[in-house]
Amino acid sequence: MNIKQLSETLVNQIAAGEVIERPASAAKELIENAIDAGATRIEIATAGGGKSLLRVADNGSGMEAEDLELAIRRHCTSKISDTLFDIRTLGFRGEALPSIGSVAKLSIASRRAGSPEGAEIVVAGGKVSPVRPAAANPGTTVEVRDLFFATPARLKFLKTEKAEAAAITEVVKRMAIAFPAIRFVLSGSDRSTLELPATGDDHLARIAQVLGTDFRDNAIALDAEREDVHLGGFAGLPTFHRGNSAHQYAFVNGRPVQDKQILSAIRGAYAETMPQGRYPVAVLSLTLDPALVDVNVHPAKSDVRFRDPGLVRGLIVGAIREALKREGDRASTTGAGGMLRAFRPGFRPTPSPAPGGNWSFQSSPYRPFESPAAPAASARGFAETAQAAFGETEMPTARAESFAPRETTVQEPASFPLGAARAQVHANYIVSQTRDGLVIVDQHAAHERLVFEQMRKALSGRRLPSQGLLIPEIVDMPEEDCDRLMVHAEALEQLGLAIERFGPGAIAVRETPAMLGEMDVPGLVRELADEIAEWDTAQGLSAKLEHVAATMACHGSVRSGRQLRVEEMNALLRQMEETPGSGQCNHGRPTYVELKLSDIERLFGRS
Image 1 (cartoon, rainbow, N blue to C red):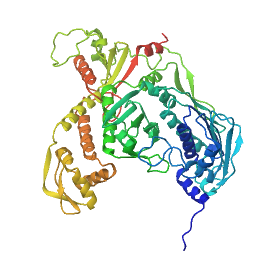
Image 2 (tube, rainbow, N blue to C red):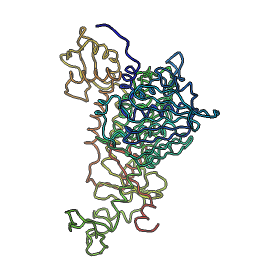
Image 3 (cartoon, rainbow, N blue to C red):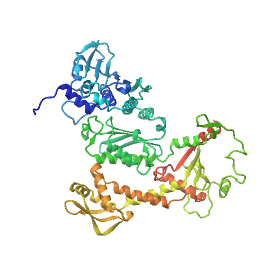
């Protein structure tokens, strides 16, 4: 079989198979070109989910007629010259336009601001038409029709028009977050119009346009730097979470990426604060020397490789945890919203089925002697008899070094962020009055978090106690895994796991952490080796120890149903104010909900 040179069209179609995976990929490449051209306004129009039509128009610098001829040739670009070590633009390979032109009907019309007329070039399935004069506004308009008509087999792998349109919307949102100074408009026959006005330097305002105004009220600003790597952006409160990771955005030098290492670092930062199956909301922006990151490792440029991945992961985890420690204990606004909806008066389900078998909801006036919410005749003040005394009790001091009876000084609720305790409801919830509202605290969840934080502090302060094995456990594994483990042997020993080399393909385990008790030693060692191979870290054992600490904290904390004295409740509130992460328990549930006085007044129609 003789070797032969492939045709230019076939080469472009092969490249298109990697670069242009779906209509959203084409949209991403064209929007990147518009941004690199200095556009301040980008308009995107689609039809048929981008398969029938994809048009991207910008007011950027535009191109001359001779530039158009080069733009549709492979590896022709104005963005780099001789090196890949200093990439400061979104595009740089010069593959997008020729790849699109080889599988679709592509037309490019462009005009520079000072030119009297524009120019247009058309490419259909790899066949190039001559450049011709055309009427055009300053900037560039790229129109893609009948995507993949030249490679019909590729059409079978596309999703529905609705799904493809949603993917393009997601691309536009990511680009809009990365570049708040640019106005984006997304329209078409297959969608409702999405308009994102420019917000200039107000990055949070642009994020609120995309993620909703709730994020503005539940976001914590990030600003950290380590060894010339800067991390900015915003992290959501732990109690402000979503059902998937679609609301996590990462940018490296302004480039939107979907890097597994960054997403893993976000998970690690929220490890002890997020409920099972829920995901935090975060927008992270990394800025570093282009020479320290390789963006040329994926055809779609969605993955990157850092020269020091451990530094980047440590920066993300440390910055988010520090931000949560600093500001993350405030209540999420969604908690108060849920409480208001639960208290909404006047509507309750009635068992009269509507046509079709559905339940109907009817307005029901309040009748004092018939309402199921009416207090029992024997109730005075609170449901629990023992709690009635709180109504006549003076406000106690929040300091509770000793719970012995003593004279107390009256403290105003405004003196403390979480206020002062007024009552305990159903032997589980503490009601506290603040300066401008009230706070309801889940006593078990709150104390569980406090105990856990104390145990974590003990874990990080010294070498953990270990137990020696009477007979060392020998774990057979590949030689490269043994090498990786031995690099981290010192760190593992600090956690109570003492290992040493036992021949070329085995590890001898001589000590294990005492907190873990009896355990599957080979399984643990192999898990650590796999984790180190993927992320070059050894966080698995530490996470296991923290899981044990969380379980112990759960069983050793104040139980639901325990009656607390006023001093005990105030002492709990004061300790919550001093403890990082006390806004949610070890399982990610909120420990308290805050309701503003204005919300309460709205419930009673006073505002």
